[in-house]
Amino acid sequence: MGINLADVKGTGPQGRIVKEDVTNHSKPAEAEEGEAAHRETAAAEDTVLPLKGYTRAMFYSMQKTLEVPHFGFHEELNAEHLMQLKKVCKLEFERKLAHDSSLNKTQDKHSHPVLVDYSKAKLTMMPFLFKALSLALDDYPILNSSVDEEGKRVIQHGRHNIGCAMNTPFGLVVPNVKDVARKSVMDIALELHRLQVLAQSNHLSPDDINSGTITVSNIGTVAGTYASPLIHVPEVAIVALGRAQYLPRYDPNDESSGVKRTPIMPLSWSADHRVVDGATLASFCKVWKSYLESPDKMILHLC
Image 1: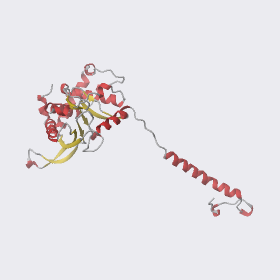
Image 2 (image 1 turned 90 degrees about the vertical axis):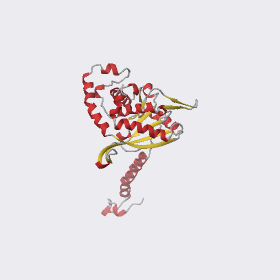
Image 3 (image 1 turned 120 degrees about the horizontal axis):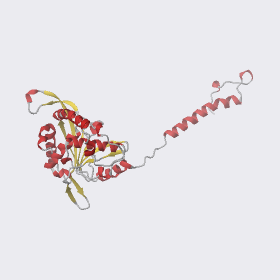
Image 4 (image 1 turned 30 degrees about the horizontal axis):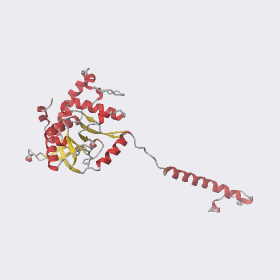
């Protein structure tokens, strides 16, 4: 039994160790060994996670993505003027939400099983990024395309339905804002709020998810700078936004000014190399950046 008799307390005559003493001494140890073995067995059990909902859809979508030849392009965005514009517009955005009693009726043409309270919408940089992206797509419509594998053709879409990757308790999902070219920055902000509320409650409709033409993934809200995003097939391009942070940069328009503390947002593009070449993507990103770094230019194009 492997028992050291020196550790056993005898109960026989003159303190002698009898059989019962040895048996009783071994029971606690055997019980502890049994409990430890049970704990190890319980800890080693596997957990089966069924594929369902958003997770199931993303599983099969990513399988198709592996068939696409990706190429990446990294850039950085000076977000200083964009942040200033957002700060100015934030006050008007909040005033509009507080005083426009017809907002819910005019904005929400959908029916859904959960309440979407637009008074809780927030103005972030995303609506500006979406609007500028739509303006850049006017110059480079090939980025607003999808691949028809069966028909062996590329379809350039007239509508700018820009997807936004969202992390939810039910998995990753990519709903899209329809017709961004025809929406104001405020319209885009409210629609993003609606999609976020529905995504978090697992109530997005097929129309909310289908017919996207290009995707934005704001991975920076979680962590990280640059990424290698995977295209949301059958689209041909996706951009991942990294975490904005203040970094030392020279002013390209004034080299004598020295180093300046500058808010920098990393941009990570992936594109389908069967459809988009590197020069086209770089030129497209340059136009997009020009609207974001000098957002006053967007006024000429806003509807």
